Image (cartoon, rainbow, N blue to C red):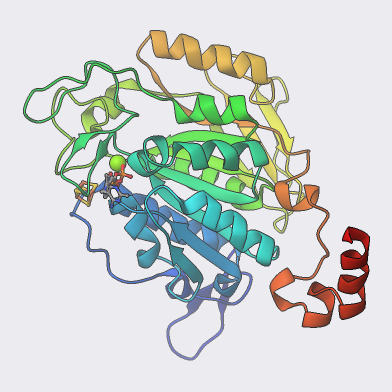
Length: 349
Ligand SMILES: Cc1ncc(C[n+]2csc(CCOP(=O)(O)OP(=O)(O)O)c2C)c(N)n1
Ligand code: SF4
Ligand SMILES: [Mg+2]
């Protein structure tokens, strides 16, 4: 994947674009040490570097929260827009309509998405907006000192001992129900799984929604919390082992089709899912929803790629836009001529 250029001094490690990983870094994190969100930032940096995505082709979007601050900590030379709380999806949709060639990555929190932004979230999912949508899910509003969010489980407690008595919104089940074409759940502490999921998400065309359990070490990492490091270590149930083979590597990997499911993505990359104990097929939507329901009853946190549907049109394709970015078209191609306007006015008389 990465090559080493000859140099009289130390060898330089670069990706297929000839870029060093430093090109994928951003500002220094101001989040708490040990916050799960920092680990996710590291995985994003690695995934975009390894996939050889040009940072100037990327747009980073977010709302409000500790999670929504993270775009400042990766790909410092990319485009970016930090929107109003819960409104990241509509800003992303607008940006992608203005320039369909951009690769969009949205960073949100469980509060930003499942509370104030739930209306925006559901429409982004049903439209299959071509973007990676990450929820850094700590079950609380970290930035405003740890109140329960809408993803907190019934019975999960605050540090003060107060228990949550409202049912959680499962953002993955909701996204699948609404038509998202790539839906995954991972854990910020699972480096290998999260890396593979992120690389597959970069290769996917359409919405890639990834809910990452990301413990808040300051407000929600105590016994009694179901979004803590300890709880995840005890309840994380991986659905499969994920290998991602990017289209540009062209590696022939031996695999047993009885044990491994191979799903080809739009760009020719492959997702290879090695079965663990359960028989799980992420392309069978009905069965995926049933598996989520059953796991919930057993208090298991399933991780892996829940649902994958590589075919189908994304929102930009459905709109039948011209190939060039609308933002760069000259006035005479986006503005009706005076004669055309007069003709319309005539029809209205
Ligand atoms: C319109 C509006 N309402 C409320 C707030 C206060 N507020 C800021 S961040 C936040 C919740 C953040 O939670 P989450 O999205 O889960 O991010 P985290 O900090 O946990 O990563 C809230 C309610 C705000 N900034 N704007
Ligand atoms: S308050 Fe919680 S979510 Fe926010 S940076 Fe600190 S550990 Fe992370
Ligand atoms: Mg949160």
